[in-house]
Image 1 (cartoon, helix red, strand yellow):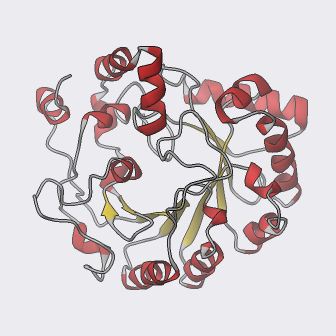
Image 2 (cartoon, helix red, strand yellow; image 1 turned 60 degrees about the horizontal axis):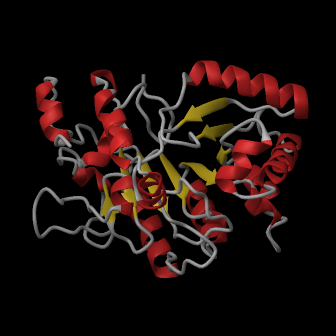
Image 3 (cartoon, helix red, strand yellow; image 1 turned 60 degrees about the vertical axis):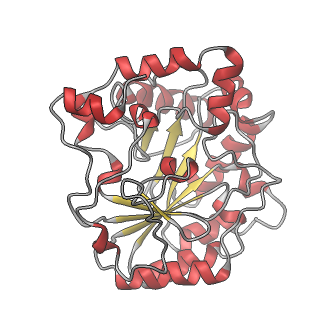
Length: 321
């Protein structure tokens, strides 16, 4: 397996650095989730106990207040809505006039006591990024669990009735169900729009295609299939120089549930903190008062970074090129 930085150099690319002050603060509030998806790089599930505390959530919002460069927060998990401090983070960010993105698995809306979620999203003008790995039940239920497709469709219908997919932002996320790269985002979006609109009357803004990262649960699945090396070869052989300049780690900082800082959510799950290129450095939200201080820092990379630069590229915002 070639080294990622060596491949960058071979293609005439400089080491990945955060050339500008970051504009997105991605906050992983914990690994607790009502689902346990086969592809999950977080290894989230109903029995996970790692969860952001009140003190950490308050420090995150204080850091947000001091960091004028941050325009939006991107809240993820697990199912972020299951964190007891989720509403505090959303409402405080909105009070600070930052936009809020929430990565929602849709089925969390049917958990006991969560009936208020849709109206809460609407009231706070939250932009939703919702997982739906196919427009039909078989692939969704295979990847995310039996009955998930039907619940997801009903959740999307409820969100549409609240204005999502129209005046309020609603994007969907596609992850491949196997060891291959996503197809063309534009073409697959058209298919989703046709199938979901015709069969269920569902509207949405964009489809985001995201490459499955060879991390945690998906990595274990690849190894069980005997396809880990094959998949890594696929990623390396489809390295796309054009994707490098648009990598999300150049403009984003990731906060872990325990307050540690990372270059991205994938590095977070591999326990590669910001500053890993400088041994002995392990920054937390208590060590800095403004994330603009991270401008110019080199991004820690590894073999998983081939996932973000393969094919059309991949990020939390979908294809890069």
